[in-house]
Length: 470
Image 1 (tube, rainbow, N blue to C red):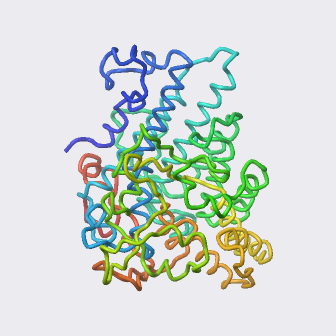
Image 2: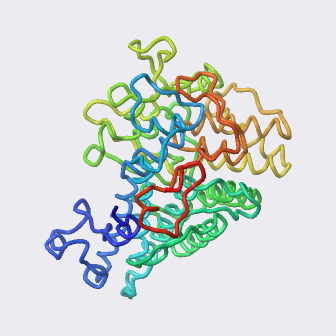
């Protein structure tokens, strides 16, 4: 077996044919390049960082599998009769030999390698471009933070699974070492690294280059999510408020809701993975997993449909397909509505304003600020349906209502299994077309296995329980 971990770190993955200059392509092979041969001008760093965003487009990251797997493990998505891709994870019977955990692991560590090459370079920029260079390095810190965070949420149990997050997380990688055989850091250590990197990014970034790149507000929004997952509700509220109160974003109007990802760069988009008519994966796009003109592997479950009011604009996230029927219903997910020659051109949200209202609502409710939580919840409910009754619940009932609203608003964006796990809930599929309809908390199968390609060559890295010794 190949040494997957070393392979991840050794390949100079920031040097892509899709984003490299012609002069660079003529240089020595990618795996032979050192930073001193490539990162020699300011423009080289810009190219490298564009490569980092290209990495996030990958179908094994935000392009498809990280959000898809996180949702098919929940109860809002059901399998179509033809379901194939990610089926093992929808049925909670995947193994360490399956390609999805291997590919996610590899692609995210490749993203970390890109970031590390930028962060650790000794390059001194000319004074005239210092702010621009700081911005790029800040974006690299944000990339490294988000990659570690996505890894730890996919391959490790949630933060409060043990006291102080002392259970195994993932290896923290902050520099290139071809010979490394790292062990797993604890979840607490990984979260500390994530926060440190996001904080450094927040300090360095002073520019706003659009919703397709990291910004200070994107980092603050992601820190709100990180702290929410840690159950540090004070900080989750604080960081959400920084973005909400910045005045730079507003909720998409009701009429524009159905096409916000197809149009891109909406008023509430903070950071999204951008696709367009030229740069898109077609049916391999996340939306292609749901639509009839793509693979159509997964369908909306009645569990979700039943909690969306009929007059809510979010009911238009679904459209009829009369070729379906019976236990499969007649609706398909249409949240990513690109079709025909433009299929796959919808942007994929990473963090947007609606999530931050819901983060803050949950944090406030769990801190005992029912009034503030109700106000935030109403912002999302009544954007969807202006006549929606205002929230009046308090205490645990209010938290339950907020989590239900998260299911509606953030559906098919990769949040559900993580919301289930961190709130210590069971997966209960009332509308079930899977071989598994109930998965109780706590459960070793809420997370992915460490890929066998890694454990075979690295004796220091332990496998997750119930996935065997490899």
